[in-house]
Image (cartoon, rainbow, N blue to C red; front, side, top):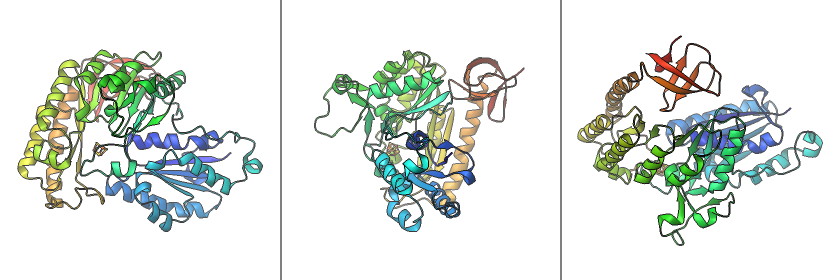
Length: 452
Ligand code: SF4
């Protein structure tokens, strides 16, 4: 029995891509293993969003030299965003890697993998017993991992050009899956036990698909060019429409999505979120800065006021919604006044949690060579102040649940998440994969606790 080990760095998009890209191997009979020593194939999905993530991925590949040298028949695949950015240098530096497949090449990946496998094995002779003869079935849908939550990728790439971000360079322009393909994947996963789906896309709520093409019911990836784009909103299925299409899926309990862009949080999206019972009361809405001057330098395409007005509309339409965000500190030219604007925005938006990062310059982005880079010590000190504020507010936001009954989707016997995405621990064992209800009795170690 051939064994496969996956090492995935970075975001949920990457985790979903890892599932998707290892599907051809699983369909050929590979079995998953958590023990790298017994693996016959290792799939490394790299991330390049921050220098630290890229460095970790590269040193991981270096460490695999020994694993590979123990048996030259072993298969090593390196994929993802860092693979896209460093393709040639990775191939030169690590010649023992069998296949380097960048994030933009996901559609060509099955054919490239097929070539590598053909060179490596005589399938008929060595693996005929359990390798099906049919070629891998494309990359449009992801294999089911057996968990009550599943990812469903609805679009790839990004049409934005935020000045700090390498993603558009390594993942390319937006491509959208057809509603038919998305619905089919969701139904399949629900029929095998999924209760909650996370719709994924780099800017997930910019999703759109021509109504005319959607009516054919095919699963296809589509990139729109400037010419030939539909003229009115009614010419295409947009993100709010997609939520309404998914809502009636029988057996599905919860719908989440990641990551929306504030520019596309329209009134119709907020209404769809409020009206679709299965859409959870949580949105992760990256703001990045509270300063208009910095938002312009970052090329984020919204102002502080626009962001706050969307937050206010979400809170008024969806009572109890949890709003989380990402914030960058120490962007080039950030003054103390800009930073104070960010602190004030954190208070005004009343976030439930925020992931805060020091600005990390990435080669190939507009922000990397900008004048006025912020000194490391200043970034560190501002991050500390921001985290103190965010954490103190997050504590009081979670404390509001004490004494309230919540619905929890159990991920194992004791642990699950509320609809607002808060972790909950049950003292009494529950059934994994099922919805449980309980009254929150305490808040301990960052989790809400159902006692007794
Ligand atoms: S919206 Fe901006 S930050 Fe997000 S992936 Fe696109 S370019 Fe990067």
